[in-house]
Image (cartoon, rainbow over all chains, first blue to last red; front, side):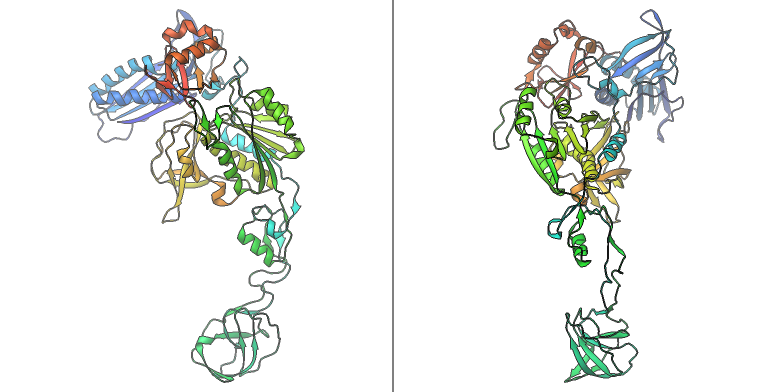
Length: 559
Length: 79
């Protein structure tokens, strides 16, 4: 049976099309609407609450189990949450089957089971004095789950992925550039547009070992009048019948020549005879690669091997580049032990230190790592002893402690260090409790403790901050195609799904979605080189579906 | 371990989520003991509350570990 499940904050559409199935003879629809009274009180609306991740799974589980005894073809369930005015639908169920009997039986049984086990609650009735219209703004589903610090406080608004990236891009500005020798500049971001100071090549050059003759000389035999090696520069005019022996790369003695490959001549002493005429000139002409004054590399280019070679060719030995960044990384949590120790119950090995250190390898930086005790006061003492002056680092990362449990002190720690918190929640899976703060030009992130959350947050958030601080182009989502079906339940959070990117035979970017169960899943990290963007409330994506994806920084070599 | 509270249980605990870091996996009884120590007000609801572990109802033998998401589900009323 084809199953589609959605939770939504929006009104359920009045018109929902049945699935296109040739075999179905029945399409049964049910809408459960909000009545005008609840527990004997007149109301104007009802507020529904859900445990979205589980509600979607549970609805699907019920349908799958009922399909065994009531064979139907397709089912679509939409449950609305938030505030629903009287008269509007809270639930929609559509069932397609061959004949009506099995659809009616399945619907009745489904509604019974839904009311027993699906984690959705009528939270409260709204008294009639409260006008509830269709336009009443209601908090996003996820905002209902935004943690509140263990106390009843206003729930923070969740940033969307786009909003979070826009905040990072606008707040992370390039640090002052420095001059650096080419030998040290690999991986740094060029901060000036470099132009060629002279033509390249600076004069006409032979691309073959052979004999230079006048281009208009139709003679068959020639006298060798000179020999030129790659480093020679001996100008002279050639007459008809003259040939100059040239090596590959040799500067030609004058213009208006062509080079005959040595394979195409017979040499006899000081004489050559051309045995085969070529059409090619075998010359690399002056300025063919670069003209003097022409831009060689644009500001914002990350200097890879080829770019360094080009700068060297253009004579720029000390380019103006982004400085080496200073990164401080704190891990937190008393349950963390070094990887060479055997965890006791409740302990886990520290993988995040190595993950972060490895991910930062693509960016020139000095990384200092420290583990902080779980007690906030002790942590502050250690940070003080470590004399963490704001001038001593550009980027501060704190692993774990980003949630709102009583031992989660990342946010207070950042505030204590003078950071302004820009956001502390994103409507994203995995990585929701990501914290981002700034203090002058300095940037800090509090990363949710799970390795997969680290991985995802690094690639969209920290990489964006590094691009901003170094003056590189901000990273962009690209368009690709799913190699396989992406099997997901509709989730009210947007998802960055780990995937393996391959280039298909037709040169399209093919993305293989990787299996991951929850944000603690480490197994898929070693294979992932891209993140596929799954919009909120989407559900499974078919094979070959077009998707947006973020290629990972290390893969592109781009900041 | 992330513990989630829903509906009227949020009114009891005053929060909708919290982190617990038990030193070792907990069975149902140990989980409740840890929770009731923090929120004695949950005691009267316990009879009607079902526990979930990673988005599925937990069975009687379930062990709750540090990486789990555990939710307290009071009687549901969807539809």
